[in-house]
Length: 131
Image (spheres, rainbow, N blue to C red):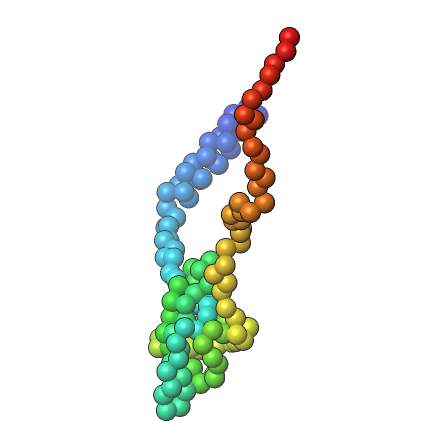
């Protein structure tokens, strides 16, 4: 009984060892996808559409940081768009928010102290101390 148990453990160990050594490891290449979410910075009109330059506002999940491509969809500078770049052409182009602008104002405002409201105390000229 003990001998059968040891044989089965040895056989299982041997099988796992052989299977682990013979499997081929495939390397997954991490490629940057061709999606971009950003604002349109420049537009140039061509005969049957527009060439857009887009600066990214979201680079998570391998999105592009900048893209330039052709689309027949009309939109304005400053619009927030989501697009897929296929070569030199946008295969998918959607306007998310028209007139979207990134605020350059800081989130935390720093207030400077004003000297207008300070009180002026005069220094006493003579002072007497009694014990």
